[in-house]
Image 1 (cartoon, rainbow, N blue to C red):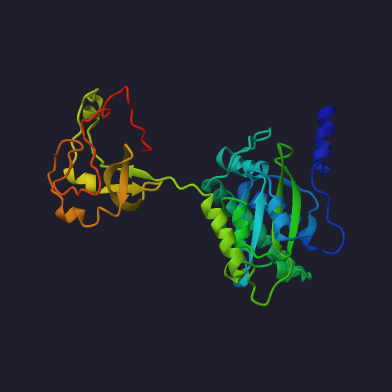
Image 2 (image 1 turned 90 degrees about the vertical axis):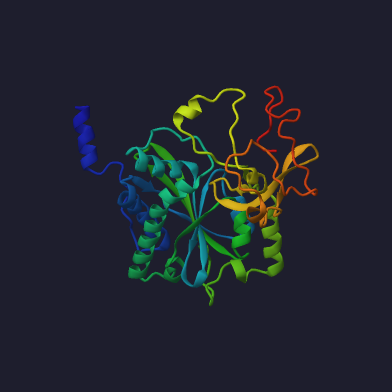
Length: 337
């Protein structure tokens, strides 16, 4: 009997959003756009609440962004800029349904969004904005010029980047609660657009006050950590050679490697080159001292490891390759030195 009632309830539309009543508005159009976008892009069932619309300025806008939220910069006509913010649960639902085909029926553990997360959510964001634009234009609502023409541009790494990118003007913020995959998760999305369309369409960037832009840029840059790796040399070895390595084994490298140390970013891209030396008792790389070294340094194909080149200059103290502490397991070298 209970099963029959359950089937009848589903046929009657239990769990579906209530039909919209009245003239179309930006909030109603956004609500239906979100629900259709979830189905179109990822086959994700979304029931969106009625969006809350409010007028905000830049400072409270930034302060209102929750921890671990995915912040997507969106660009509109004539360089106008807006923001779409997905909370961790909404982001997790989109990722899970696209990677596993289902949404886990529990709250996701909050984590920092990655570039891959942003890429996987971009289609959903763009489809929502596309539907919002098409329906607002068709309905000829007053806010059509405000909400039309925006698409995903990039993910922002930190809320402070918003103060550098956006002008300190009024913004229109739509906050929408989301029921994801029939209650598997509860999430939220914010769609933030300039409150009004300016004549130029510019909302930030070069149009900002120069002093405020410089201060915001300095704050973000100074607090940012850049990880670089110094690569002395790379050697191709057969698996059998690697398996035969033991304590005391020597790997031979060109002597010129000391003057051609590669400084690379976290993805292995070459940033610059330098000369290996020492400073205050620690290994150091002198940036720029390797300029022209590849033309003057000896080109012995197989020289003993850390053997100093013949053109070593006195301004950088070259390390003793077999001095105290080198290759001594009791005194390991910190790779970050």
